[in-house]
Image (cartoon, helix red, strand yellow):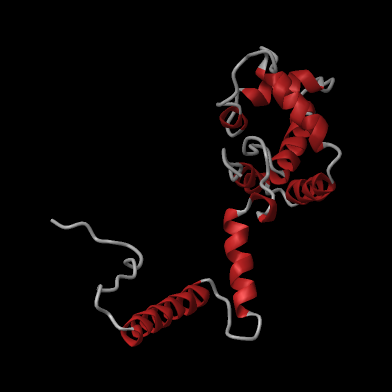
Length: 182
């Protein structure tokens, strides 16, 4: 089976080709290259206009020239988004109130570390030089971040609404929406 060639074959002229024949082959090549460049510009969503070729060159440069590429976010993907953090803050505060006197933050986070969905968010977590051996410490650390978020205030209000209306089962369903991937 023959390999399918990609691109245009090299220009070839016979030894006895006249200057007109050479110019005709070159003109055909120019027409084909122009047709392909127009198709490429259309595929990249660049409309026809006086600056079309500049915009096409810029788009291609953004794909291949490091200085023109958009910056990439570094690091590993985030596990704890604002939604997860805000729900966590409310759940830690809720867990603290489950006993009299109220539990400490560490005791509340220890209880949450054993339950879904928080246990699942800690699943990729493993003790090491950057992590404490206690998973509840990881949740306590995230709680420290969560308490300061503006979104947490809105989440507290949502919890208070469910509590006031006696629909804590709906809040619990909301908590189950927390997933491993944000």
